[in-house]
Amino acid sequence: MRQQEIVIVGAGISGSVLAERYACQGKKVLVIEKRDHIGGNCFDYTDENGIIVSKYGAHLFHTNDREVWEYVNRFTIWQPWEHQVVARVDEQLVPVPVNRNTVNLMFGENLQTDQDMKQWLEKNRIPIDQPTNGEEAVLNSVGLELYEKLFKHYTKKQWDKYPDELDASVLNRIPVRLNEDGRYFSDRYQAIPIGGYTRLFERMLDHPNIEVMLNTDYADLRDDLTGFEKLFYTGPIDRFFEFKKNLQEKLEYRSIRFEFESLDMEFFQENSVVNYPGTEVDFTRIVEYKHFGNQKSSKTTISREFTVDHGDPYYPVPNPRNQQVYESYRREADKLSNVYFVGRLASYKYFNMDQAFRCSLDLYHQLEEESVVTTNTGLD
Ligand SMILES: Cc1cc2nc3c(=O)[nH]c(=O)nc-3n(C[C@H](O)[C@H](O)[C@H](O)COP(=O)(O)OP(=O)(O)OC[C@H]3O[C@@H](n4cnc5c(N)ncnc54)[C@H](O)[C@@H]3O)c2cc1C
Image 1 (cartoon, protein in one colour):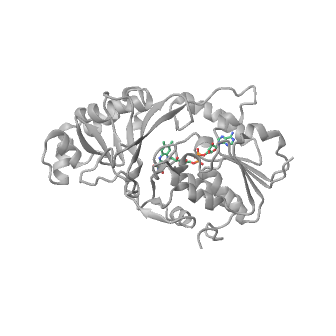
Image 2 (cartoon, helix red, strand yellow):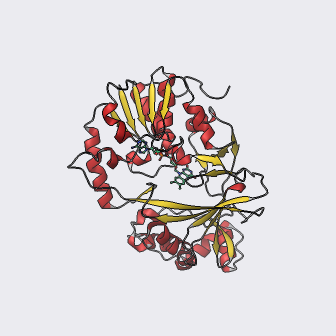
Image 3 (cartoon, rainbow, N blue to C red):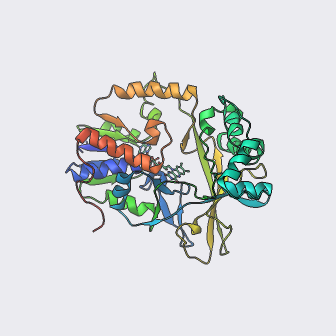
């Protein structure tokens, strides 16, 4: 029988923040992680080419949340990194999200000012008052040609559905820039951790009050865990209840299959991420990790990403059926008094990293009524 005060399922961002916070408060914390490593989907490692690669896809930190930024800075050193993405269209590389250069390159235009771009969009977009699906949302925003070349097939590859089969909200807020800003994100703080994300998690969890059990599924330990004060669960909410006979409906997720390749050449492509929005290949993008933080090696490592139905749960599928199933689990979760569901899998919601940090910090505050910056556990 284990007698920890705080039990945490999952050693990703959501679990690690709560572990760190409670350990600093003097609580004995047990973290249970079914994978053989900490860090959740942010986990990275140095490969045979001496390059830091992310096992579950490239992770770029970006936030406008100053408190979260200060919090993550306690544990590691960050280098500024403004991520850029290009897409291969008709044998050339064009910036995404769409900006003035995208249009100039794809259509041989010579748009010079924001006003020129505005006029181009006005001429090309197909105005639809209340878009009812993803296709209408994109047509309303950028028009038919950009829709066909950048959005239609990319969406099909990502969701296995064409935009007209998806809710307008999925594509409603696609960013379109009038200027030449080629950054993928526009947040105030954009950075990557020097030495990788795993180091950040190692430091967060490096505390005498924290015990981490890797290779351990919560389902196998459930009956051994007694007498805890609080349990935080950051795994998929449907799996938590799978032992209940009346709650058997599964939530749907999209997953990604990563095909890593080591190449005996200095660089494979011009940019860290190249999207493939066309039908000529099945993958959505190729990531070349060496570009991140300008890493040095005589070789290079790339990863082709294929979005698939089965595998680790990555992206919740936003549709009414899944929302309804999620609500039924949520109601069951609300009946439990000392068990808390937190993080992207337990909330069945896509979170960026900063949102995951924010949610766990908020939950901790709400439960413990403390201010964030109390104890310094990071670098000294
Ligand atoms: C491909 C991809 C790329 C992304 N890129 C970015 C990006 O560039 N920028 C950004 O801000 N965000 C990005 N994100 C989002 C980011 O990964 C998440 O915000 C973050 O991982 C959420 O942390 P979490 O702790 O909630 O979940 P997770 O990282 O999924 O951690 C949950 C942990 O719980 C464990 N677990 C689950 N069930 C059990 C169980 N039964 N027993 C024990 N352990 C269990 C899992 O193994 C996992 O380690 C990306 C996500 C994906 C999928």
